[in-house]
Each structure stands twice: as C-alpha cells, then as structure tokens.
Length: 100
Length: 170
Image 1: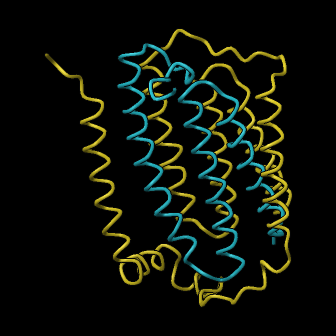
Image 2 (image 1 turned 180 degrees about the vertical axis):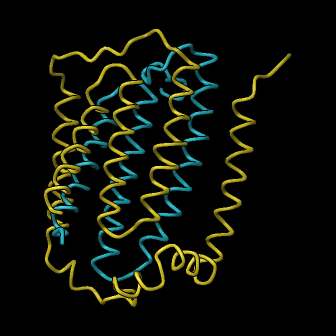
C-alpha cells in the first residue's frame, strides 16, 4: 500500500505550485488554471483521508467540488471573455478599474 | 505499485511546474491536462475508480477544452513577459508560498491525523457493493439536499455564463 504521507506531500506540493502560479503569473487564464490545480490538490488529499479512514464522505465531497469547479470555470471564463472585449488584453495588471 | 505511484507523482509535479513556467498559455493548458491524467491514475490506485473517471471526463475533457476554446477565441497577441530578474514581489511570493508549503507539510505529517475514528466503509465493503453504487446510494440518501442545491447551482452558472458572455447589440 502507498504510505499516505507521500500522497499528502504530493498534494501539498501541487497546492503550493498553484499558489505560486496565482501570485507570479500575469495572464488571467493561467491564474485560473492554477486555481484548478489547487482544487485538484485538495481533491487528492480528500480522497487519501477518505481511504485511510474507511469513509466514503470524501468521495462524495469530491463530486461536489468538481461540480463547483466546473461552474466556477464557466462563469469565470465568460467574465474574462467580456472583459477582453473592452480591454483587448489578458494581462491582469490592466484590469485596474476597481483599484485606487 | 509504489514505483508506479512515484512515476505518476513526479509526472504530475512536472506538469504543475509546466503551468507555472511555460510562456505560451496553450502549452500551460496542455501540461495541466497531463497533470490531471496522472492524478486520475493515482485515484485508480487509491480504489476510487468513479473519481478517476470523472476526473478524466470532466477535468481533462470538458473544463480544459473550455479553457483551450477561450484561449483560441481570444488569441491575445501580448505575450507574457516572464522576466528573469528578481523583484521584491517575486521574492515575497516565493517566501510566502514556501511558508504555506511548510505549514501544510507539517500538518499532514502529523501522526495524529491517522488516529481518527474509522468510518463504516472499509475496502472490502466498498469492493462488495461497488464504489459507484455506494456513491449513488449516499448521494440520494444522506446528501440529497446538497445534491439538489448543486443542481440549482449548475443551472444558475449556465444561465449566468450565457448572460455575461453574450454580445450586446445596440
């Protein structure tokens, strides 16, 4: 059997890479992909705990997380699409209308 | 078994670093698809076949195709400047994410995490009933309210996406 610490460490690494992507990248769509990566890291740890504690709740949670991720991707990408129509750019530094 | 897990783990971390460092957003999306496939393989090793299937179908299939469609639709000409020089913001981001990693890793290697009360579905019971049948049974009994709410959420997301992305004619 795979030791659960290793799977959890893999999940921690993936989550950290996602956080770094959100903080370092300037392209909105790549930032969105990093958010998806973080959601996947959380899914991995959910399923690991669910297996190691003999429970099915984690698997049901993943079902809900994937549905929420799909809804988030759809709405977020349509917002990006409508911002791109007015700003003609994907650089997040240019989206500064709400900044003071 | 363990060797296969390590291979897929290394591949998925490489894919994640591809998202972080590749310049072209389309290459980032394809590398993320690779990560999702490797995670799906790891889910199979953890006896969660249903999650592996929806991971490949919904994440690697639907969501990433949506990302690629939007990328090709926008076809932005401004290539991202990934400058190699160190700025204060970059160093701060690195230190901050390293802190987050240490925090999570410290929490996850705690031995007490595995001492929780065991649930009622050990691997033999799951194999006997079948994991998909078990998930379906749980979804329509214990989690029926959450299931109905998530249906409304999906409906609202679809309508909202159409309304937001629709071109307005004057």
